[in-house]
Length: 217
Image 1 (spheres, rainbow, N blue to C red):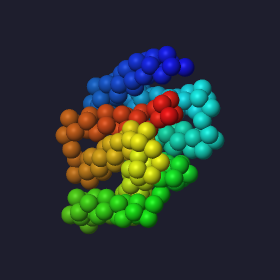
Image 2 (cartoon, one colour):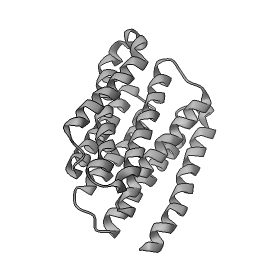
Image 3 (spheres, helix red, strand yellow):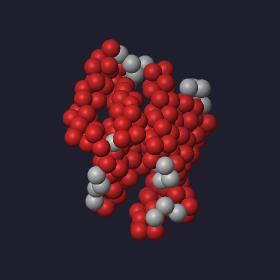
């Protein structure tokens, strides 16, 4: 199993980045099924990584919540290309499942609430000038960052409340949060192609970091 822990990242990370490259390189083609397949394929690598870790290393039953959350992310990757609102809802479900998973690990303390509200406040300050232009998307775009903030804060609690082994998971959650801020800004006012590519790579590395915890605990 020690060899597998070394070999799997050498196989899976290039696979994930290849899917990411295909998706980014064909951005001018628009939202096609093939591009969506590449986008979802990269996220599915993270799903497979989590499942392999859970099965091969006999992780506890609650670890399947992580795999489920990543699967929701994979579905959301497809949905958000076709309807941004339902994509936000799908990612919101993924974060709610992640919150349930992290809570079972012991990632909730009262200080987590304070940290989550601080993160939420920072996000609100960044996007406050755009709230009037969101229209029917106002409610999803107000609620989603709240869920995202709690997920990020709870994940950030793990290295302190549970074990320093969870630092990679916490960094992954933080990367997920930052990536989502770029996605939101792109929806509202647009971002550069370089920023889009960077946000997507950050997202893939985030879900992979969270999934890979099942290999290295």
